[in-house]
Length: 400
Image (tube, rainbow, N blue to C red; front, side, top):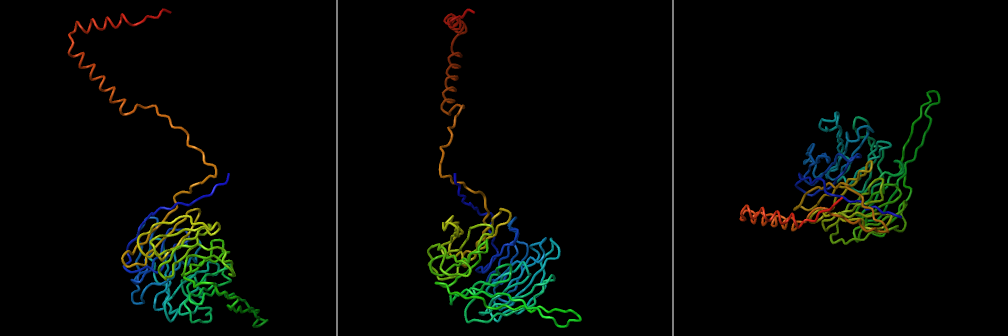
């Protein structure tokens, strides 16, 4: 008997603090903490287990917070460091020394000439990729939380919608909005001996273009599936498309109505075939990119649900949704509550037996008792004695 499992989510918390549209939501690796950034110039740190606000970081001088990413340089403490970028091109690094202490600034750099569009982190080499003004850069992040620029890729006159590390950090995938292009830059290593006597070796790391493919439609946002084998693209026309890497023809397409020509973020649930995408009708849609089916639609609220993020850790899946409408600025946390098994052969439920008395049976017994009591109270004692004796005479006797 084949069972298919449909994940069921419920809203655990609704977080309200931002006063202007959201731009980024990022869950940490163990699904306990959340970063949110918005046009109000605030970067907020949330505890999603309790639904509480842990810290408010105001960078209004640098404009809206446009991108954020957790940077877990310590494997034992995945929530101690993060980075975020702003509309003026500044990129910040924050670090937490002790678990109960607030995060503090460790570094800030003028990363780009304009808005920081997106950020990605490579856990294998502790590198950050940033994009802005059509240019992608790769930075080394040391244990003290400082950035060091190690490579700047060629600039293009197009908006970069997404950067992602691939193949354990050896590849960098860059997706452009207007040109429909997906660009792969590969890291090449060259070692050369400077002096044989000292046996010194210098490693020169360079990122070179490996391939470039144009997709049929403009790229609103993109991400890589949890198994790292599929590129998931939210287009600006009619939904979501999936591609092999490098991309050729779409593997599957997931269609849903799009009325507003705005980029809708898409996110893949790690260790799962599920992908989540925002919408302009107030709902979060969850697809299975293996079966091509719409698993469910979750009602966030009214208007544009543009910002989404998802993560899965030890079987615990968490989704977050955020609105970009000025009338309803809210973040919702969705938690997996159960999996419903759908059997191909449905069995009828077992019969239910009841041994209790119904309501009307109880009412009848009460009325009979009241009637008998009224009769006995109105009869003389000698009449009651004669009535009992007559009843005893009518009772049959059994001989053993």
